Image (cartoon, rainbow, N blue to C red; front, top):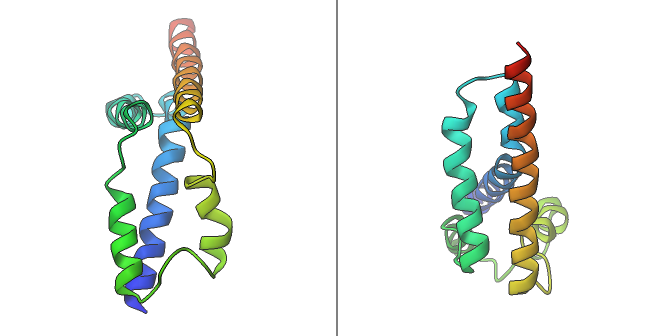
Length: 121
């Protein structure tokens, strides 16, 4: 039971990290030091997408699921609703490039907005 809970926690952490990579630039509107955390996270996210590398959270989650006696991602709310967001079926290199471009574009717009807002002040 503890391994399954830990695997679910890793999955939620993974989702949170993905959302932070995508939208974390907006935090700079409120917190001046947010880019210190966000820019390295965004760079890592882009690296993983563009290189086809595996995020270290994925094998950790899988090991925990195996330790919990699970063979895959069947069952439960988290597996049913969150896993397809993080591990979409049919993920190809081309799709990963598109996802990387979206991350780059969203963050470029966010930081342009932050820069513009700070210039007006």
